[in-house]
Image (cartoon, rainbow, N blue to C red; front, side):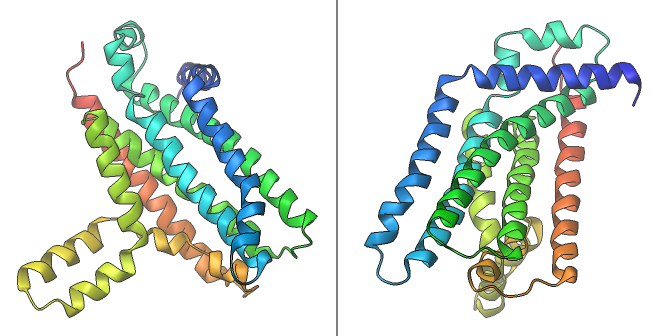
Length: 260
């Protein structure tokens, strides 16, 4: 990639960040996430069992869900809005390659998501430390892969946004988010299904969707279990492979889409 392309990519990414910083709905989403993080102190006292365990579980859950919600909101209109406002014609009529445009949007989303993630993670860690919850390496590995899942969802969001409407984009992304975490269950159902059609369908869904459960180390963090380097490398490989697949697919579709 040439120096000019890098400058263009950075400009597009920064523009995504600036637009998001002025977006009131997105700011409300962030404020709501922070409110839920601090409200977990109240929820933990209402749960039967260990308050420390409830605080950790609630924090992991909130960060996982709010990542999906943020990507849904950011990604559903990231390309569509440019087309609707006709700003994409102004950008692409200049010497800006479509791949550069798409990657700029992607990295802009990552900057926005990273800002939210850092705020949520720091607030959550502050709450855990204030309550005397002992932290272990598993907490930080888990946080890293929760953000990795956000990035993966962002790449698929861009893929769906390249050829679908915002409604279908949200439908596909929610389906991918939930079914990706039920990957092992889908495999078990496909093995135990009596119908050949159901068996084939579940098997196809299992192999087509990314295994998001491979990125889940929450149990290890909760029970201070060691996480092997092999598992971390496998999870990183799954994350990188699917992210690149989604981005390459998005680029292939967007490059052939008639816009101008």
